[in-house]
Image (cartoon, rainbow, N blue to C red; front, side, top):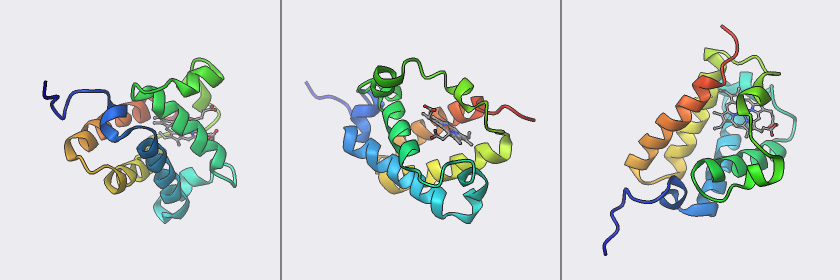
Length: 131
Ligand code: HEM
C-alpha cells in the first residue's frame, strides 16, 4: 500500500534522529549568532551544549519519536521549568525567529515546516510568564 507523504509522525516525516539533531543544532547556532536573538541568548549558559541535548531529547518525544526526555528526566513540566526566566512576547518572538529560520534551513518539506511552526508556536506562546 502506498503511504501518503502526510501520514506518520512528525518524527518520521522530518527524517528521524539525524534531522531532529540537525534542527536543534541549527536553532542554537542561530540563537548564538543572530543579534536579534541576543535577549534570549543571554538567558542561557555560556555553552549551549546542555540546552541542545535537552531540546533534542524533548523534541524527539514531542514529535512522537522516542521519549528520551521523559525517560531521563521524567515529565517535562515545561512551563514550570521556564518560570525562572522572564518570558514575554519579545522573548517568545526571538525564540521563534531562531526556530523558524532553523526549520527553513533543515526541513525541505514545506507542509511539514508549516505544521511544525504552528505547533511549536503554540508551545512557545504557553511559555510566556510575564506581561
Ligand atoms: C518562548 C521562548 C523560550 C525561551 C526564552 C526559552 C528559554 C529557555 C531557557 C533560558 C532554558 C534554560 C537553559 C537550559 O536548561 O537549556 C530553557 C530550557 C528548556 N527549554 Fe526553553 N525557552 C523558550 C521556549 C521553549 C519551547 C517552545 C520549547 C519546546 C518546544 C522549549 C524547550 C526547552 C527545554 C526542553 C528545556 C530544558 C528544560 C530542563 O530540563 O530544564 N523552550 N528554555
